[in-house]
Length: 380
Image (cartoon, rainbow, N blue to C red; front, side, top):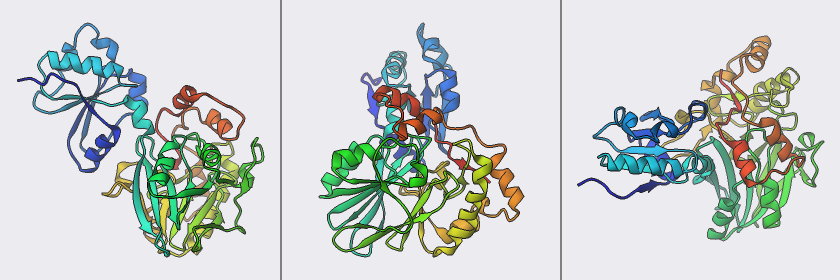
């Protein structure tokens, strides 16, 4: 007997299937341009694109390309088109068809929290993985208090997590002015009553008040002191500032990733900032303890993700294996980070202006600005 009801699969369920290495066959019915720019990928993911409008007169073109003995996941932008197509496929005789709940909009916004380690006082560090965009943000919990670092705009997830764990959010920190996604930092600080921290060298043109995130200041979370020590680390932006937490963790923002390095061009100053980036990566970071756990603000490929879904690596190991850290010649490094760079993030200029308080797009406009992959890295 054929399946007759629609099955909806959440973005988190799909991501966890990919993590487990399960085979996944996807029919993506968005238009060709959207599909080419950004889609669900993984080592065991097979994906084909047939635009929705090509299936309005019947799903025969899809039936000819879909497996008859495997589950099929239908994906569209917001779910509605995929429901229509999936229903037609069921009526045509396919037996196992589901849709991505909320479509690629939900895929882009979903957050999956995972604990990445403990603190010396019994607290913990949690990583919030925005797997549809490769964004990574953090919640540092200690003594009933919390600090959130590099929050994305869907701030309800942090507030719900804090409530569930009996935490009061006291600090919200952005390591730099982001250009690939809209920060939820100010919004979260306002709704939680927390202090909002931002590097002042990135904040010359912002329109709001903030606490200056500078190297000589320390931020304390919890009744027992868990120190967050800012480390000035320019290169991705002129103000980029990393955080050393509890002498155990290095939150590197967009300066250093597990298998790549930050790009210096998103403010149009690649030539100016290439030297700063090299100094951070080749002088400042090597002076830090090699046993720190690197916790970046992004990842680019699924092979950077650990089996539990986290993205983290020992700093010393990153320096052994990351190709962007093996370029000894300064001129060769400059060319690496200024020439033949990947495409810039979609709407990155508007995103920067929003994060500086100079634009105030509504929710739908913000969502549209963020559609697409993150592109903050230079791959060596």
